[in-house]
Amino acid sequence: MARLENGGIGDGTQETGKSDVVRGALKSHASDAAFQTKSGAGESAAAVPKAKTERNHPVGSTPKLLFCAVGTFISFMVFGIFQERITRGIYGKSDRFTYTASMVFIQCVINAIFAKLVIHFTREPLDTTPRSMYGLCSLSYLGAMMSSNQALQYVSYPTQVLGKSCKPIPVMIFGVLFAHRRYSVRKYLFTLMIVLGVAVFFYENGKAHTKDEKKEIGFGEGLLLFSLAMDGVTGTIQERMRHSHRTRPNAMMMWMNIFSSLVLLAVISVTGEIFEVMAFIRTYPYVIEHLLTFALCSAVGQVGPRMRYEYPCSLNTYNQRQD
Image (cartoon, rainbow, N blue to C red; front, top):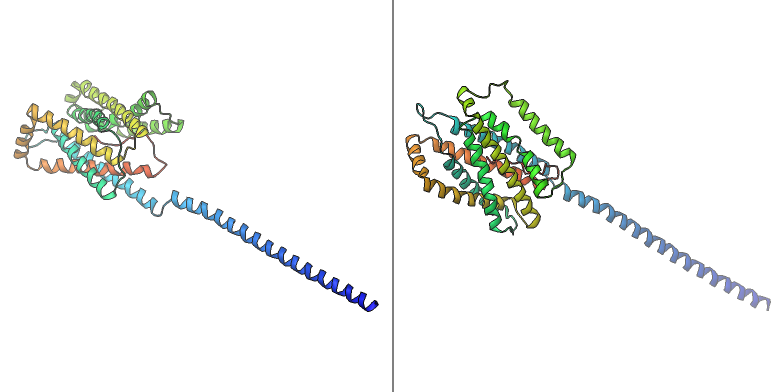
């Protein structure tokens, strides 16, 4: 009996030991699974910010940004040189190129062609903005270009650049009044610094104008003020387009220049300027090289600022040099 009891007790203890071993194994397995789950979650959490960082900072974004900035600077520098050479230069003994509408017409045609090429090669997404809005915006855009270029017949080039450096001011004012935009104090400060910096740079102690220019300086300044007002209107319409539709930057450039080209073609045809400028080109054939270089630099220079939408650090006043 004692032997049986001892055997029974031994068997019970052995069974209890086996149960404890099974429970321990199950607990160990559960702990390993939990650890692996936490580790996997940690790795996933670490992978998400990394992917997000890679999306926010794509490979090659900094070189691309620098390329756009340097390309824009060089393009508009050459643009300014040829703009002054065309409008302020002397051809032959005393002839001057005074055909502003024809010059802007060539500029708009080249801009439209270049924008179409960029859309084709970059496969820009579909633009949903109504063409009528582009037609309306092209009128103020054209008014700004025409008046600022015509002002060069009455004021010096530094004066014209000084006036156009104030472009962010009407753009921001019109944006607040009519497009209901809200800008930070920092943007107002940066705009003021840009204007003051250019003003100081171009200040020449009253030597910016010749005696002939001083007689008609009032009209030239009036043209610059009108150009700035048209810049403000253009910026406001563009803000409305971007908020109400899927407006694409290169499509905007193409359609606005197409409508402007059509208007200018009608103007130079009705006034007969197209025949006068053709006669001028026959007399001075090299002027066509100046006009094409001027227009091409204008088109190339506009691509860089339009690509700035990929970068969050830009000043959203749409302050592009198109005139």
